[in-house]
Image (cartoon, rainbow, N blue to C red; front, side):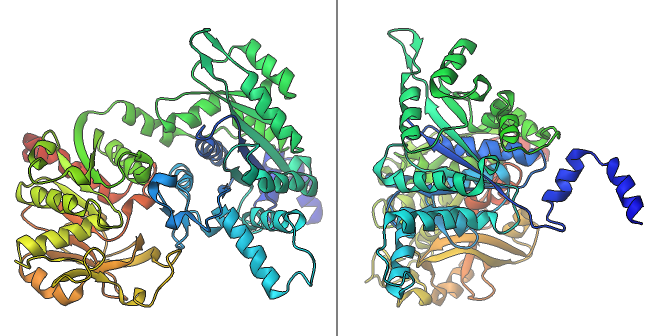
Length: 570
């Protein structure tokens, strides 16, 4: 029997052997680690490059995950104003995280977790907690080794699960930033700990174009690499953001002065859409260089057929609509990043281009609302916190309800729909949310019972995925096609069930209920083209390969309402 196994093994390709070895059978899967750093300026797109690389590796059959290390001292971005850091993204396990985790999930179509986003604040919190507990046995607690060891522990957590061939770690900020130094040092130490073939550094940098000189300039990249090397790290691959193509001679020059091979200088030209980037990186052979340097034999060609079909539909829509997004933070569009991307996913699913008109909710007063609704085929009232702009959102809901304009309300947007219905249909004058008006006579939106004894702000909301039971025969059931769903939440206030019977008798359908807490999750109005409000955040689960059913059907309804003959023909 053993001889037979030996003979058969001769005919197994090296690629098959690698797959067997890395499958976890017999031996646990041993992860390799990639670090993505950035230089020259922030917002170059480290998250998109990391996501694109992971997508290419995933398309070759390798299992990948990505984590983000943020250098700010907040424990997480949950208490940050969206203008400070963009959208706060929420994972299934209830972690409030950086918006880049949304990119990771949208590209890879796999969920992330608390372990995928770590901040300086969390690292120091963990170390100080251990010190107070006496774990360091009287030692002097220092940045090196205690802070760096805690960073390394968090980097390795995902790899130690045995689920991933490759763990990609994006280090936030720029090299040279004071707050990023402990992360850079921890990554340097890991290269020494794990060995050269188990770690790899990708440095994203900028090649600016000076219009006055008509030239691309490499000096900022050279200085960025020099700064990184002063921290003891020599990048293995340079990814160069540029507005114009990089001539081969310039790649050669960059390689020469930055001490990398010419093949490891990767052009990252500005793209029409972020979803082009994986294909651009494939053309530049980024995934091939990574596999070569990590000594991973993989001759499988990247299967990106689904991705390419998505891009084809994205760039060649058959129809076009305009949806108004009404929110408090529209001046910074990253505040609603997941919603914007969900519109793209849903648009592609319907072969429709979704033009988004960003409307500040404070401008939605009764004197201008009709003018602001001109040209809108549908409206989404966005999530948010606080009193500012709330009346504008309520005015928008009223206009959409009365004028039969397709409407989708998310979280606070749903709550505004409940308030508006209470005031203008039920006649509950001054009905409001307890959040905005604690002395209202009709608190139709109230603080959850489990939140009433909560005093601290960070990480204490209703967070993460919760079940929702959908009533058969409703629009929500038609949208989701099943009676039990899981969606992610981020809120403290809920529909006040003391008013539930009044709302139902007046015609509002409470089509989705949490089976455990009996809280209202979905409301809808019949005899309307599309009027749905949800307490959860469907945008958090929308991906390229699995667009949110709610967004898909909303966009479909908007188009059908905008073009009546299409609706009548179906």
